[in-house]
Structure formats: structure tokens, C-alpha cells
Amino acid sequence: MNIAEIKYRDIANGLGVRVSLFVSGCRHACKGCFNEIAWDFDFGKPYDKAAEDEILRELAPDYVDGLTLLGGEPFEPENRPELLGLLRRVRAELPEKSVWIYSGFTFEELTGKVPSRGGGADSEEMLSLTDVLVDGRFVYALKDITLRFRGSSNQRLIDVKKTLETGTVTLWDSSAHM
Image (cartoon, rainbow, N blue to C red; front, side):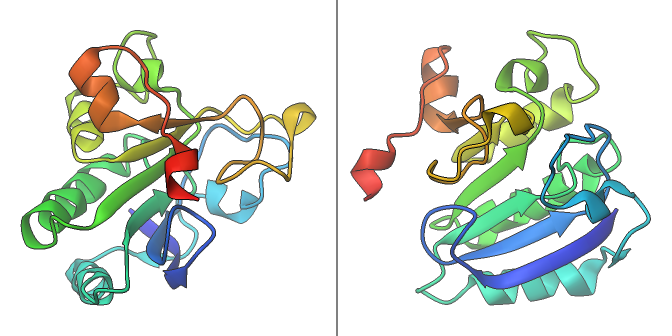
């Protein structure tokens, strides 16, 4: 897996101050994508233990609310092994931090309800370690710059913990976090 970029003090991609890891590689090719350069799996630099250690160090301060994974596409099969390891480590070492993931796959695709390359046991485990999933491909015709934490109106902010508990997609309550 390659890293397209890491933002250590990001306030645009999730609630609060976040460490945002942009991975390389995406096959969705959404028209109007803000990060088209990261579609290439070879873009950026290789992800390694040193990068992971640095992410954990940067997550540690109290004023950092959590980790956001985006891309590229975190749930591309090539990216899942390293990201799953990172999420396991974040949950073990910094369990108070929130985890957000942005994905062009829908929750239904990631959980196998709708067949896709995004599904599988590793995707389901990644979801189990996630607080909020912003799901769905960016649709240029539905672009809306007034939306909070998403680019087009078809995308959902899913409260993953509640969704997994109830078995019904539950949207994240952004009004509770204004």
C-alpha cells in the first residue's frame, strides 16, 4: 500500500482535529473527484512501520480527536491488510480516539449485502473498528458544498457502531456534534 498524503492536523475530514491518512489506489474513478491523483496505486510513498508509528505518535495528544482514512479508496483489496493492522493498533493503544473512513463503496457493498470487490471478512473487521463511515461514490451531479463532511447528497454519514448493533443503517447524528 502507498500513502498519497498524511495530514496531521486536519479539521475537514471528520469531527474535531484529526490525523488523516490518504491512501493511494482507487478504481471508482468518480467524475469530479477532489483527489484524482490518488487513483494510481503507485502514487506516493510506501506505507511502512515507521509511517504507522508516526501516525500513532501524532494521534496521541489529547487535542487530537481521531483518525480518518480516505484516499484513494481504503477498502480496495490491496489497501485493506495494512489498514486493518493500523486500526487494530489504534484500538489497542488509543481506544479513546474516533475512527472515520471515507469510502466510495456503500455499507451494503462492504458488508456483502450487495456483491462488490469491497466486501470480505477484512472489510467487515475494519468496519467493526470504525465509528463513522462516509459511504458512497462521489456523484458530481449531486455535489453540494453546503453538506457537512461529504461532497454529494447521495453519500451517507453512518454511525457504524449503532448500525452493527441494530442491523439497520443508522445515520450519524451530526446535530449532536454542532
